[in-house]
Length: 329
Image 1: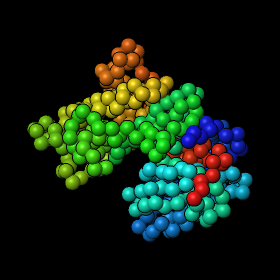
Image 2 (image 1 turned 45 degrees about the vertical axis):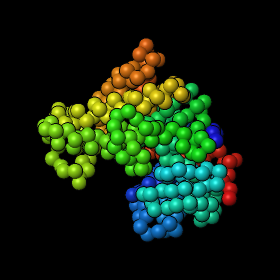
Image 3 (image 1 turned 90 degrees about the vertical axis):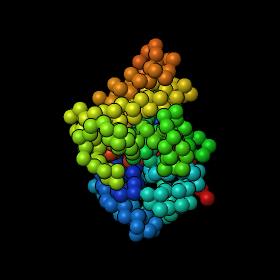
Image 4 (image 1 turned 180 degrees about the vertical axis):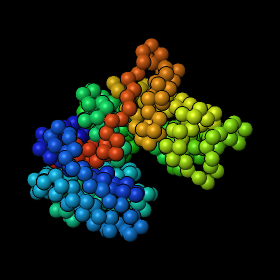
């Protein structure tokens, strides 16, 4: 189902729920962030304990913005995992340990308001399309490169979810770049190359074949994005090789999306993109021409995400502006 690109409400409230933290924002009618609140998720304490923390965080951000929850037709909540939006249910959220939880209903009963539930990557795409890097564009595709690889499609101001909430999940397209087993269980998914996890694996493989590496870690460690950035700046051979291979895979994925969706703008976000920024932007843009007839003739419009950590929560707030689509059992 689609979401309105912008709701004419004085205030909207959205939350980004992750495995380690929850982050809430209140925005005004122009998308300006009026207040934020965050706290640890602590999923090990159980489902209902997390809902109580969400309730507390929602109250805090509303108070900080001087907004009454009664004034809001709904609040938006973005979280990882496949979402049944009509039922307000997350099918499975491994980082939280949740399966088939009716989050919209349960949280809504706690806060005494309607909750609009959606996938975090989709809401990140919606936030960027409404108030971020693709504001004003007729269509966009946002790719978030982190531990995995997620994507979201915005067409004519509407978020495209698909029949099963899987639209835009190009990280799980089988790619021609190898046969590494993905965390989803399939073989050769694009995110096994085009992700931070993929880059680290490629660095380890390069080191194993004798390519010099300035990063000091073993296969059981996970270097931070900032460490990868520093190695890239220091012209580390193994890191450069891995990053370039990962960018080429990402470019292939974006060119594949273009052949089906043909968005006006591509947005690149996530930890690795934030760390390496414009260096990767040029690599990806140039490589897309290799895999696309269209982009062999003209350069694609590829932009870095602008909203940072607020993107998902802002997108959730935007989605909350359409409270007419109320989740039901």
